Image 1: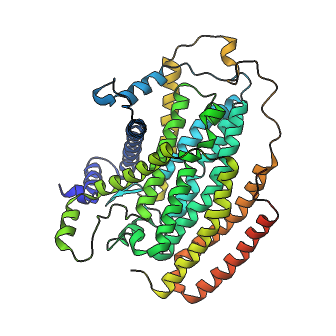
Image 2: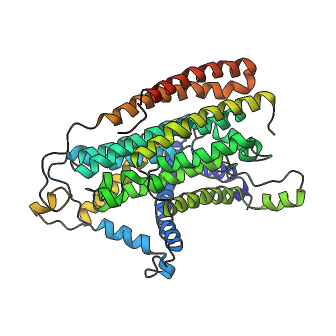
Image 3: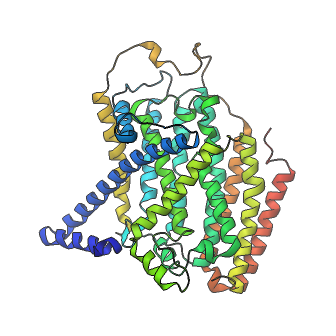
Length: 361
Length: 116
C-alpha cells in the first residue's frame, strides 16, 4: 500500500515496466496515451458524480428526495441521462454559423482539459508540474470564455447572444479577482509551482498561516471562482427564467452535454486550485505539536485529503447556488469592480506588508 | 512529465468531443423538418437576425479588463520575488498600485463602472 501515500512508486513502476518491453520513443508515446485515457476517464467520472451530487444537494436543500428511480437511490440517473442525450437528434438552427457552432464545444472542452493538466492530485500524482503553474492555469482556464462567446454568437438566437455577452463581461471581470487572490498567497510562497506551494504547507495551510489577509483572499477567491464558472448566484449567462438556457439554448444532444460537462469540470478545476493554494492541497491537517493527532491524520492517504478538500469546496459552491437569488448584471459588475477589486488590491499590499515584517508563520 | 506532454491534453479534448459527437451522429435518429431548424425563441417566427450591434457597456468593461489584466501580469513576477527583495519591492508595488488605483478611481468618477 506504499503507493497510496506516494504515487511516484506507482508511476516509476509503470515507467520501468514499459521501458523493459518497448523502445524509449514508444514508451513516451504509450505513457502519453495512458495519461490521456486516464484523464478522459476522470472527466467522465467527474461528470457522472458531480451531476448526481448537484441534484442530490439541491434536493436536500429544497427538502425533496431528488432522483430515486434509476439504480439504488438514483445513482444510475446520470448514466441514463447520458444515454438519453446520446440518442437525441442533433439540431442546428438554420441561420446559425455552422462551423463556429460545432467548434464551440471543442474549444470549451479543450480549455477544461488543458487546465486540469496542472493540478497536483496527490504526492507524485501530477500530470505536468509547470514551474509557472498558477499563471498557466489562469491563462488556460480563461480560454473557455471564447467557447461560450462562439456558442452564443454562432447560434443566431437572441437569448444565446445576450447570455454569451453577459458571460463574457462576467468571466473577464472576475478573472482579475481570481488571479489577484491567488497572488496574495504567492507573495508568501515565492513560487508559482504547484508542487512547491503544496510542500510549503507541510507545517500548516496558508489560510491559517497567512492570518486575516489569507482569509480575505480565500473568501474573494470563492466568490470570484463561483462567478468564473458561471454558477450559483452568478449564472446570468444561462438564467433559465429569462433567457431559456442562455448561450446553449440552441444546442441539443451530446453537444449540450459537453457544455454541461465543461461546467462541472471547471468547477472541479477551480475547487482544486483553491484547495491546493489555500487549503494545503494533498497535505494532511496538522496541529502544532499534537503528535498523536498528526500521526492519525498522516494515516489518511494524500489523495483522499485532496479529493476531500475539493469536495468540500464544490459543496460550498453548490450550497451558494441553491441558496442565493440570482444577481442582476449591474449588481454583478458593481460587486466586482467597486468591491472585490479594490479590496483585493489593498489586501495584496497588506499581505506584502505582513511578509515584509515577518508577521506570518 | 515535461510540458511537451501538454499536447496530449489538447488531443484528448479533441478526441473526447469528436468521438462523442460522432457517436451521437451515428446513433441518433434523424428526421427532416424545416420547423426544427427554426431558432428556439418564443414560438412565434423570429424577427430579423441576432447578429446586430451590441450595447457599448460590454466593450467598456472589456477595455477596463484589459488594463487591469496587464497589471495582474505585472504583479505575477513581483509576487514571486517579493519575499527575497524585501522593502524596495514593497515600496515599488505601493507606487504601482497607487497609480493603478487612481486609474480605477478615474474610471469610477467618469461613471465607466455604472451600468445603465
